[in-house]
Image (cartoon, rainbow, N blue to C red; front, side, top):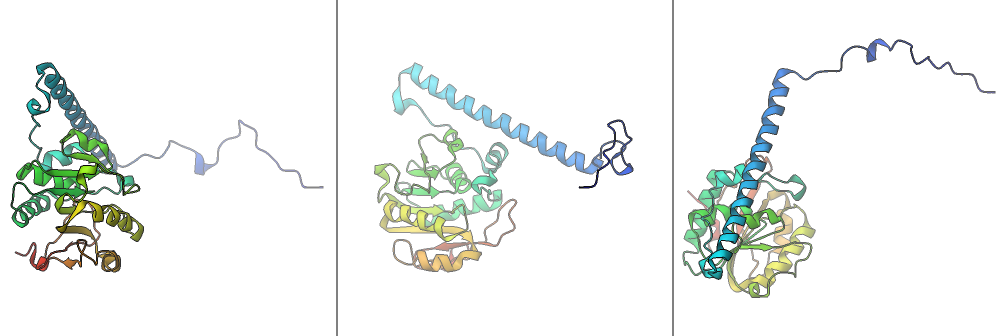
Length: 264
C-alpha cells in the first residue's frame, strides 16, 4: 500500500521562496521597454497615416475622373522615413539596410544602369528599392515582395511575390528586367533554388544580377548562380551594412568587372 502524502491546507503559509511581492524590473530595463513600446506605437501611427494618405489619393483620383494618368504617385519617402514607419518582421527574416549603405547602393545602381528607360527589379529587397526610388525615380522600377505593406509605398511599382510560388508573377515581367537586385530572405539552399527559378524567367538574356546575402552560403552561390544570366557570380568590393544584423554579408555581381563594384 503506498505511503500517504501530507497535503498542506489551503491557508498554510507559503514558503519563503514564494513569499513577498512579485519580482520587479530595474529602472534601466523598464526604460528600455518603455522606449521599445513607444517606438512601436509611433511606427504604427506613421504606417496608418501612409495608408490613409494612399486611400485619400485613390478617392481623389476617382472623383476627378482622370484615371491612371491623372493619379500621380506620391514621391518616395526617404530611407530614414521608411525605417521609422516599417518595422522589421523577423518571422519574414526582414532586416533593413542602414541608411548610409542604402543610399550609396542606390547611387551605385544608378551608375551601373544609367538609362532612365532601364527596367530594374528589386526582389525581396525593399530597403534598396526605397532608396533607389527616392533618389533616382524611374517608371520601370519594380519591387517584388511578399509583404503587402509595401503596396502603400508605390502601388504601381509594387508586385506581390511569394518565393514559395516562384512561377507566379505578372506575365509582362517575363524576360523584362535589365538589372535585378535580390536579397533572399533565408540563408539556405532551398530558398535560393526558388529565387533562381524566378530569376531565370524575369531576367533578360543580357541582364545584370546583383545578389546580397551572407558569406555563410558562398558554396550555394557557386552552385546555383553559375550560368548566364544568373552568373557566374563575382564577389564585389561593396561592404553591406544592416541596421541590426551582425552576420557577415557581402555583394555579388554577374557582369564582367563586377569585382570593382562599390570600390572606394
